[in-house]
Length: 220
Ligand code: IYR
Image 1 (tube, helix red, strand yellow):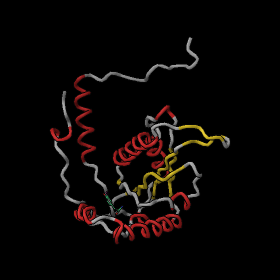
Image 2: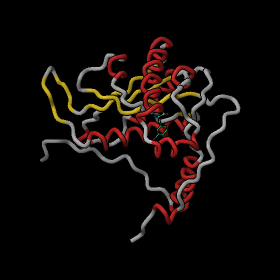
Image 3: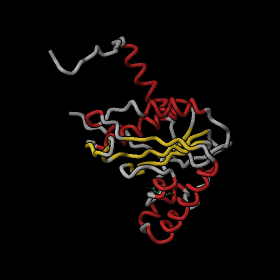
């Protein structure tokens, strides 16, 4: 008799036909995902943001510690504070902290230090990673924190896309200001900042090429 209970897996085996069709359909849907830097200010219901976040929070994590907090920000004041602080850092990045090679690599995205999407998008989701947990003042360990939060971030981006919204993975650097502005505890460190909403009308995206099958897959 085990001390820790197991429950049956909720699983229905698809037919071979459905397996092939579903994998192909999902690939096609996900292929249409693009990072978007220009947002409409059209409102997105809080329930949709909650659903998207809870999809992310269903990700696997080291020892199931779920070492993440998702801050969902719709307050105009907080978004302005975040934009101001992010632009201050990005100004420094674009004017000396980033190497010539890095700036050259970014040319095709036409980015600069200005981050209007931080106030235009109806929601900002800020993902925090917990390098350790604090339970009643005592530190408890988390494991594979970067891997876990990275996987959850992927789930989040997929959920945003599948819901019909757009996002961008934004990483102003350094981004400790997010911890201060959002009043997060000392065990939480900012991981990613994602504006979420509808794309601005007529928005364009860079004409990027994704690697082909034989460039990313090695079959053995
Ligand atoms: N964080 C900066 C710079 C930047 C860096 C990378 I790597 C990108 O793929 C895009 C931008 C910015 O957000 O502009």
